[in-house]
Length: 452
Image (cartoon, rainbow, N blue to C red; front, side, top):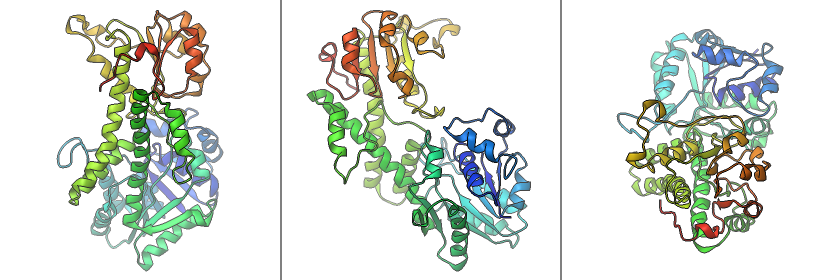
């Protein structure tokens, strides 16, 4: 029986290994992590991450050919294929701080694999890593492997949180990069055979290592670029009276462009886009390509501009201050159908409200510095609020009883739709003053320009 071990039980490792176990009943899959609480959660009825469909997949396989364990060394030692799916955050200190990926966890994993291995292994990069990381990992394994042979493959994930299980069941492509040597090609084939249990052969792409590593960064940069492009257009739409939904629909009907990722919003979030673009910028700078680096920096600058612009609209609309006002925030995750709040625009929006409080109105008591409360119910959140901001596009928020909400809010009542999900005309009929990104401005807002 082929044995697979995945180091890292997070958003990528857990769901990916669960689907491999489901689709490959003849393969034993172990997901390992040093976090006792995380592994305990994977072995419980309350999984550590929310992803539609994940519960069913885990329950079908767990204890049969899918195992979650803190005994990292044992399972790595026994495995034929070791996936490494550890965190690669942006460095906060030292060389490349603020841009470069921190590979501390990756290096630690590689050294542990070399230390405990007693047989040849295929080591698979699943985390998003800079180009040429495989080369560094290869050196660590080779110099510490005591004669054991390792083949390094790059198999980047292209999952979208909220649809990860569907993405795994029916991927657009599975990308496998390896060395262009007989041993490298043999390793590629071994991993290809795993995915071939359910993925059509024409969707399993093979490249060299460096192309696979760069493809992941490039894919995320292109997707983020589309979001920043439509968000830049949303600002122009507001200035001219155009409707960004109509513009993006017209643009998206061009078969060369397509309709996906053309929804204007308060900005992109999540653990990947900003981190990967900053990493790409750093790689460009290190390779003497400042113009290319500057190009990709603009994607992040527009994203920051959009969040600032949204906050300025809120403040300007509400008599130029939110001091001593209640603002209801609907949604905190960076997008619907996930519990992930990493880099969510909601954090930036809430933080940006802080600067609007004049010094003499700042709360003096340490116990009242952060006047933030969390409730389960949208109606409770909006009761007595002066304004509400929709920052996550949960389906629930499309179907709320906005008349009831209006009746229980302070007047004038404001709705700031950061996801373009409400019926603007209907809400204006109820009596709301509505700001919806990229749509013709409410008469109330026309003389209040938002300058970020």
